[in-house]
Image (cartoon, rainbow, N blue to C red):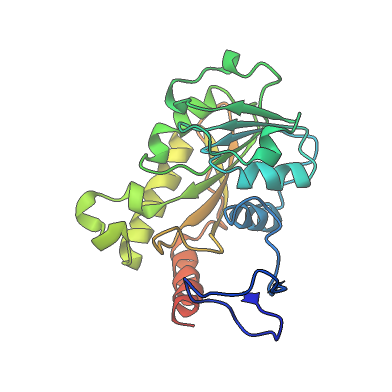
Length: 246
């Protein structure tokens, strides 16, 4: 919130105030360059993944929220890769620990593209594309036993007929279907599926999204008995639906 000299809220567009007005800001300062960082912050904590001294590959880096979190947690390098351009925050663009890989379609990336060391930690936060098109390519790049934290976005994984108005998926059954599909696919693509949770914040349009922890393996992966998609879907709706109504 923006407050005036008398602690009054200044929240109306076009409100005229004196150029001499002393403004006060109320609220918690965002610790990362974007709110997206909150997703990875939760994942690292819940999944007990240590970013310290890791060489990270940030697929779908955008503004750089995930890269920012990883660097603050001690990562030694981040490849900030995105199909777009001019999105990465200036703070990160200037950082010697960040390799900017803009205008890059990850589906066509190869290990030799990553010239400052093979990644041993990868994060995925992509839109308008399924993880089924990302995970096979990543497996050829990341180190064996490398950690992967991926955001599962039902709006880009479910069939068009299951996505509602404004691109929002509300049906818990569709969420469960998507999670089971991606988990099974990841195991088939030689990843252990270690843990599952929900994103602490919704996507831009209000979509509930999910976090999965994978570990790259040399053969068909295992799905941990602790991975419970049905429970996570219930918890996500109970938590995030309440937040929307608050």
